[in-house]
Image 1 (cartoon, one colour):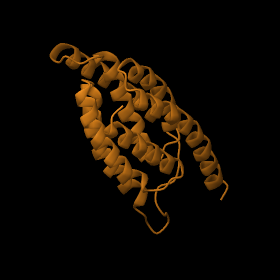
Image 2: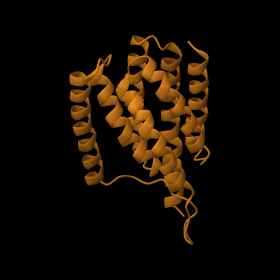
Image 3: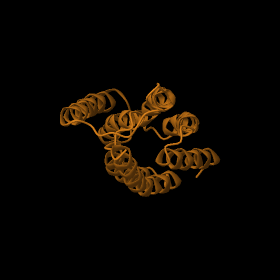
Image 4: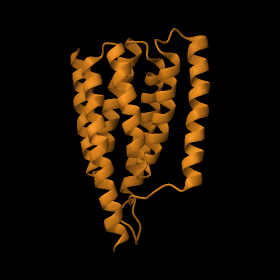
Length: 189
């Protein structure tokens, strides 16, 4: 464990906790976390995850904008569900992204786990976009991804990060519960 991993993990816990609470400060704190993790993943040759952090940086800005923009009728974005078509399209894009990135990483780099890393990366992007749009389905997808990430990080001996992702599993369960309540509350108004 390095001090940089400890800092990134601490920021990660704070960012996800704030996300569960629907606090827009989750986005700038998350931005700091992904910048730090991009360097860490480069060091351990998880290149897909390193690239993912770069995309996450852009998505952190997108999420912050989505959550803080308002109109006359709405103060920020409300929790909603995906349509069936939106769900299938997003998951299809995740699958295509997984195969494409996995092939590139396996063929052109010395990536440690090119296919698993690519799959987790592609579907993490799907989950992050859903989170930025406050789609309820982001939480169960994050739960599945976080469980798989725990195994990957244990394999790469990033034990603190594995612990962080185990905590993310619990936060995903809590977030799913909280956001379902928020959506039900908004629907009853």
